Length: 250
Figure 1 (tube, rainbow, N blue to C red):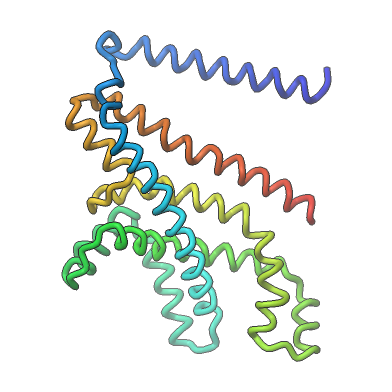
Figure 2: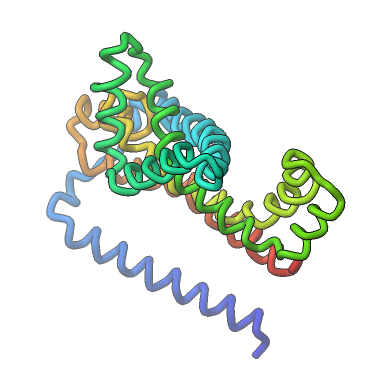
């Protein structure tokens, strides 16, 4: 039996097992006779808009966190001790804070008292700031893949800091950093659901509204579950694809 056929049959068997588990859950569900997603789908327009908002928020937060993460990396590598300590302290604050708590503090204790009440923008900025240390770790790990000989060569040829990053470091970083970057995007998509608690009209928020109006909580969560998977599963597959490509480049 060829490896391709064996892999295909194994995949089909795995799907069959998952199907049996889903069927078992349905049989055990006590209200299966009254289960109906149609009342929730009557609010499909707001659910779809929330789904699009989730994608938009996640992409913008990813871009913002990449920029902030690189700045944070430069801060933690700085020879100016005050800047270095600021970067490290910020890292520890973020890593020690749950996302939901961070977002509540960002909006209710910082943005709102300052008169900035645009929840969407606060949510995007908050997610970007929260993800910055994670992006900083990506840059730190990727830069370590550049060997000392290259740094020595840059020094010999008199490269400025800008030239080092522009022509040598960043081009190599991009190919190494793409897989974990997409992985972080998956984390951002899932984390964006917590923006519901500051009133951002993303997917969780809009499905919750549909649940409240239709009195169909379980059905709403099922729809939400599927819609999040429609975003995250392709991202996971893309991550695996780029991981293989990077491995072949090496």
